[in-house]
Image (cartoon, rainbow, N blue to C red; front, top):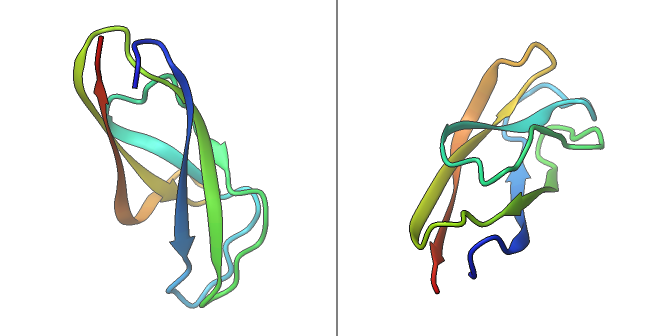
Amino acid sequence: VTPGQAMTKTWKVQNSGTCTWTATYKIMNVAGNAMSGTATAIGQSVGPGQSVDVSVAMVAPAATGKAEGTWRLANDGAQPFGTALTIVVNVGG
């Protein structure tokens, strides 16, 4: 990507638990470079066994090189759960 490029990262996540996720569950950055992304609600209820696409608007860093961020889902109490989700971009000149 180019420095400062606007981009959207989308992850497909599946509810492998026994409780329904509410529309206000969110994906949030927990480590690394958030690339200007903010915590974003999943926007719909997701029952056990169902999947949802969750997208976060981001901006590539201004500096060239590799940038990596780690995101996780979080419940209504802001408690992260589930598998870590990553984004890795190579920012070139």
